[in-house]
Image 1 (cartoon, rainbow, N blue to C red):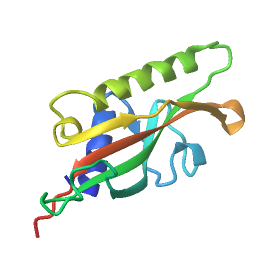
Image 2 (image 1 turned 90 degrees about the vertical axis):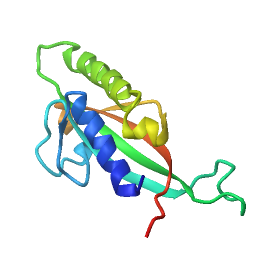
Image 3 (image 1 turned 90 degrees about the horizontal axis):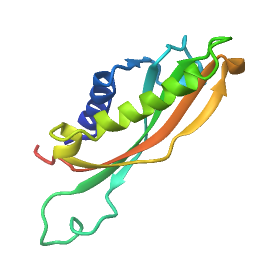
Image 4 (image 1 turned 60 degrees about the vertical axis):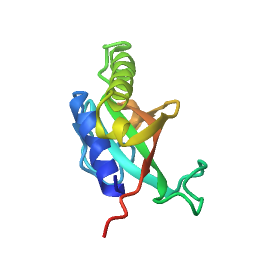
Length: 145
């Protein structure tokens, strides 16, 4: 796996979960474009050699990388709908975890994943609920030239 294929795999899994990609490099929380109800953004946060033992030894070939992404889910809040947006946000967070963790995908066959707890914030004067969490993907870096 490579850093760009890891990003593509995360986006593909969230799309498979029924969410719509908000095509802004700044994420849905920064309102750099019109927010999409049930939209998501994936932003690379960090990347580097994995701190897990085994790949730093001279007798082991290859290099394991750990890449972290910030994922944001956006949900439109409609006056008079009560808890509809928070309920949908929780359902979509659950779906995102299920699809990211699904067996037999690039993320789970070529990598190992860790999902952080989610943080909820109200954005746009309370018009949107943004659910943000971190996804850490550890994989063997493709070193073929």
